[in-house]
Length: 224
Image (cartoon, rainbow, N blue to C red; front, top):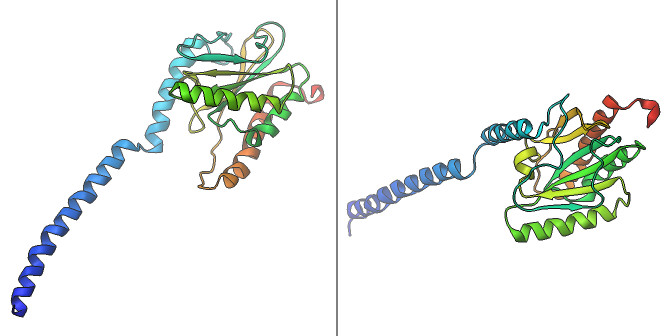
């Protein structure tokens, strides 16, 4: 074959191949846009759901919260039920899927420094019975790290719908002794990293400070 023939052959092979690769690239980009929505869109959708449940369950400052939460699907109470509206303040701490004591130990110990305060850990159950079982087991192990009658946990299938997760969700809700919501705190911005140790290093102090801010806002310094 002459040089021109080889050139024609190369063109006939490379042009369709390039076009196919371009089409494949565009398809992957469009697929990614559909399957992996942006953080902005996710936060917007989360806010819509949270606002719905805030209205439905009275999770609004100055309103008496509806408790027990009228959740559907799988729900499990671990530990002693909190005395909501029975003379003791209650802090609902939304830990979402992050059922790891190394993330929450500072925040939980900060809350337990308030003698009259009861703490309820709110946990997302996940989408399937396998997730429910695994998360419940994790939660039981976590509660063993904080052996107090003032600490309990509530795990539910609808929990992340009502409170959201760490991206745009509610971190905690503080109710006074008659069950009226006094403080609502959203999640701070948390670092994303492929290394769990880096995330713990970032999340642990931020979540601690967010919980401390809520407690400082409601409880006098001398009572802690």
